[in-house]
Image (cartoon, rainbow, N blue to C red; front, side, top):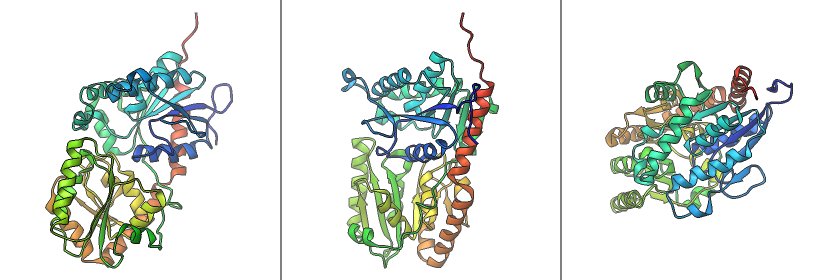
Length: 396
């Protein structure tokens, strides 16, 4: 059923985000892509994003005069452009700090409710100071003001909700709603072909573990590379990893990869962006997908691996235990413990039948519990509740 406003029309919603296809580099961008597709069945939806012009969304760019300044300033200027363009909607829904301030200011300027989805929290990612410098203080300020003043906050996991309430104790727990990330299990499905493996140099006859993600402290790539030194010799490591946060982190990861390659074969680092088909095929043929994150509110990439029928070895942090059932769809280990990570990966590499059974169970779990149709319906229901409870300012 469609969500309607007080006039009986379909509720007009502006979804504001940094990432939107074709410019998607992280889990939040994937979330917005699939959520928007399903939400458009419930509300009159317009997506406002950042980056190059595209036919599927209203794109906004930073001010030219800030092109050589701190990235956080550029983001804030882009947000102001969004605010100017969102005056004709009933509700605004923002994703990540990159768009949260736009949602908050839109709410203040036009007197409409702001719903905010929390995919992570800036105070829990202190390593971002390496990337943004003083801009990290600005990103933290943008997030804090938006979260504390939003009409409703969507947390992508129960772990994320707990983090919101402990980080921002002034937030009323009643306005924080848990709505998980989802997966399109028709698109993310086991792919029997192997041409991508062969092109990337992955031997389909040897066990392999796959990582997909950005090179950032949060994702624990150095932890994985230290663990890889303890993997059984026949196990291949496939790193689909790019976009390092800082030159220093890029150098650290490069040194670790080079040291590994000096001692073992089967270390494959794919630095360029892969398309979805390529990622799906690599995941489908992995003995295990590995997620060594130090901080992860949910980890949508774990759902992608599970939907491809692959066992997951992941850190027992944040919302990951709500996705990966330990001992059933994968194995959970404590974060930042390379030896424990290596032991879990070796366990599955030595027992391919167990890994296969976990992969099968993971796909069934992804299908039954993380469907985007249900997630969009829950989100539209929240819109309805917020819109009906909002009090419009009286002119005069």
